[in-house]
Length: 232
Image (cartoon, rainbow, N blue to C red; front, side):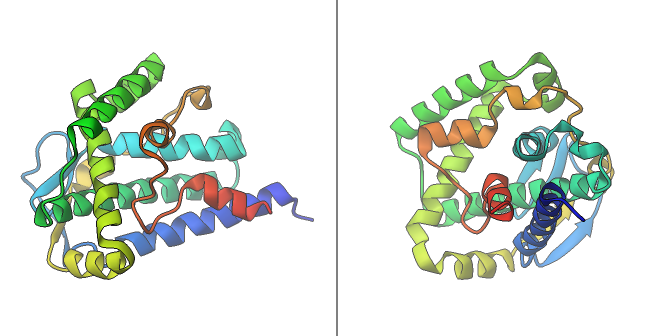
């Protein structure tokens, strides 16, 4: 008889795959595999882009949440490969959604206050200093870029809050006006962090929540929410 732990993991895997698929729906009027990307540029959406270092922050954050629930050995389980792929796709969806919301911020002339920029700087410092040397090497992100990512996340939340109940309709409509280009060769190098004690340090979303409150970029929920629901 299948134990509750395996059932929970399979339910979480299904949720991850469904959410990743749903979050990308309508995100760009076309998906183009093209050339001419910068060395570290993972994708372009509209007139903005995402680097592999930024993507790695999303990926390792989701990986930490998953390992807190199922343990580091989950990647060696029968569902490990499927779970890895689902996490990678979910991170891509979340990064894409963030970049679209930044474009909406420009369109709506929404900006951070000086106080919010200071909080982003403090959050960046705490997060970066908490990372192990292995994590810093894996992510490969500079501190000023990391601070910008905290600012982007806070700005995206302001966009979501400002639009309110009609956000998803506005988001989907706006996405249909954008081109989405993925750097396929760089995407093929994406891999989860092989770090044994990954859960000993906080994730990006945990540090963000400490300073700004919980954010899910609107539609998406966190891995922790999903896994808790599967274990009830």
